[in-house]
Image (cartoon, rainbow, N blue to C red; front, side, top):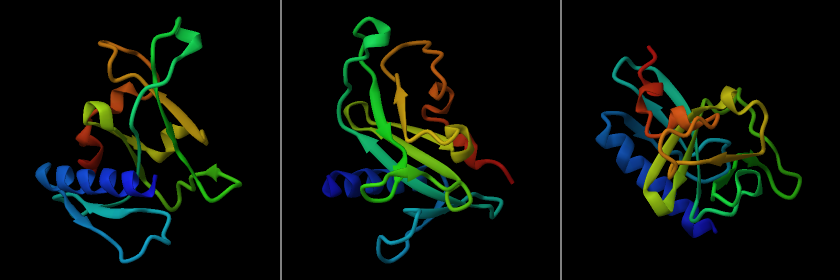
Length: 139
């Protein structure tokens, strides 16, 4: 699991650089964020990268699959991410090579979110953040 997480982070770092952002990666993995990202205006965002490999069955949607991403932090007593320490949660869907850039405040304290990148015109809560690099454009 740690190996996949490192891979997701590296893919994000490369994609952020390609999107024209500057990426600063701290030494060690004890901080609540995986990196700091700076936009062209000099604004810095604290980013936490999460990811998932495959979709699971969604009983509420008649078996249509969903991708679930754990957005909590901590060990066994998983707690909601502290939005004073993280600005943006990046959820990476490995199977589709898709990033979601979700402002932490949009999680509303959720410890897990469901994403539907494979459903065209999905109006699920976080779909507007799919491949939405514009969240970093704030000055």
